[in-house]
Image (cartoon, one colour):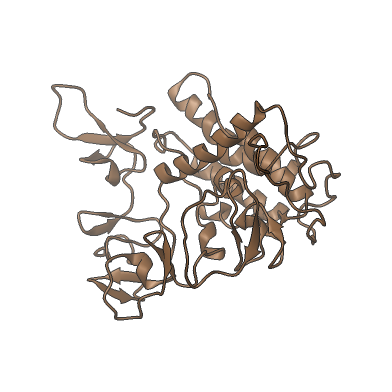
Length: 331
């Protein structure tokens, strides 16, 4: 089933990865990174083979270093274009709407890490797919009614476009580096791992994927699952069969959901229909038990969930409720 990753969780994942990288930049020693000094590939989307040298490891007693180490020279142009759209563009548009400077954003860190992976031939990017992502981001940021304290949502066109090139058994730094269906077992912001098939049992959900966080690939676990079934309580578990009793959507497996405490394959309802286990089809959200499209700027509202960004309260002494609009900072 689709991975439900909200903006707050994405911000926490990205922040965790960035903190490690920023702290490591102050370290006295930096481990050499495989492929970091290699010449840029002539076409980032070309067929790639794994670099013979694996990612650098943090050995006992060493300074803590990020799994994506130093990158020489300018970032890969395609990586820089994608990361600018994912991070810098929303910051610029928000600053234009709210006034003031754009402030901190992770475009440079994203471009650096992604360039390391591209130059090591661990991932590939397609010029056409990156172009579609950039166009989708620009459309989604039109106007100001999307502005909220949370990160701007990632359009579907930007998901799944960082494609792994490493086979099972190869050393990796991110599940995005592994070919489809494989995950990078043991990887974290400071540790490399190994591309492996999903496990039937064992721990799960314990690490942060550094590259997925900075490239905002919020649905990467669909293509690179940790478990053959699903992750429940930090451990892999078998999926509940269709019609079986369930308590959460994840227990039913990918493509299914928990409806009235039973696993179902029913399609998600569109705007205007009753919600299905609290879920709705893409472009709609569940409000008071029914699926609804987000309200436009200026429409009356009672809560944030009704609006594209936020329900802005009217001035004190005015009419009750609020109107949909932008919110530049947390209340």
